Length: 128
Image (tube, rainbow, N blue to C red):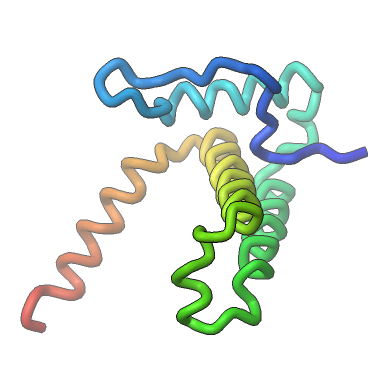
């Protein structure tokens, strides 16, 4: 029995949005993912190891879309509606598993990203 897909969207579900931007709220989506898994009793399967494996599989499915494209074709991948749909779905799956992994490990993904950008700015200064 499958314990995914990571995105786990509900048909016709209303997406929670930030009050200011009109865009989905990351923390709210992370809660929805946790609630979705909990309602299906999937938590025992959502171990760090399993989530990392699932993340890798979904990332590979995204790679597969681009595998034999030329650089020019890859730049136009969103022009084809069917391919664009597949790309969006795989990106959603990658993000869903990454957010679930963060939840299980207690990592705030935005704080982690900000810290990494700070380190990279120091490591690779302008003009360096």
